[in-house]
Amino acid sequence: MNLLKLKSGATVEGDEIKAFISETKSAKYNYLMAGVHGDEVEGVYVLKELLEWLKENDEIMGPFIIIPILNIDGYRTGTRTNAHGVDLNRNLPAANWTEKIRKKRYNPGPTPLSEPENIFLDKLFQKYTPKFILSFHSWKPMLNFNGECREIAKFLEKHNSYPINNSIDGHPTPGSLGHYAVEKYKCPVLTFECPVLDDNLTLKNIWKDNEAGLKLLFQSHLIS
Ligand SMILES: [Zn+2]
Image 1: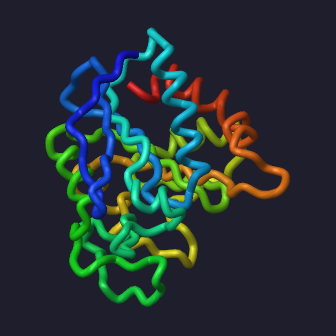
Image 2: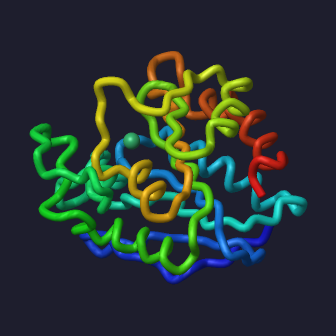
Image 3: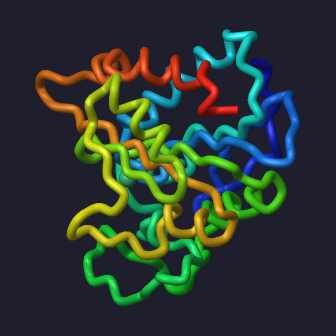
């Protein structure tokens, strides 16, 4: 698959947010993204490996939009939030956005869509309508789906045995991509939560545990 570079975005601190599009054009696109939370290196790594494979595979055509790391400032500093201290996955203009979040790590920002990283993401959505979004995070292994993508979660679960959820118990996510993309674009979102690194788990292990399932998924009819 050949990828073309799109016009980049810029972070709060002026760093480049890279985005790529497949040569195959379509009315709607599959989005692959990672690094919404800057400290979640596991998800960034899995997408990086997946992307290398996609680029080498001539049978996979897309249509795709790929954002390897959205929160570049947070990735550089190893922080969850962006350089304004905002949780980008609580800052999107979903109906349930709320400023009444007390914990600093979930700071939703002063207003919905206040952050340049999310403004860039939403401009991409407006220009290249999303039909499915796969967003890689890391926390505890989990396949959390919003909208109609349970089948994709089940497909991946067969390979990685991560639990499937469609709402994180006791962990509401107002202003998240999962709410926003479903509401605004009727686009299902699979939030792919990788496990977090520990003494026995390396980035390569996490990729190995997911390599077969992800590769088969992208060769299946579920992603078209
Ligand atoms: Zn996350």
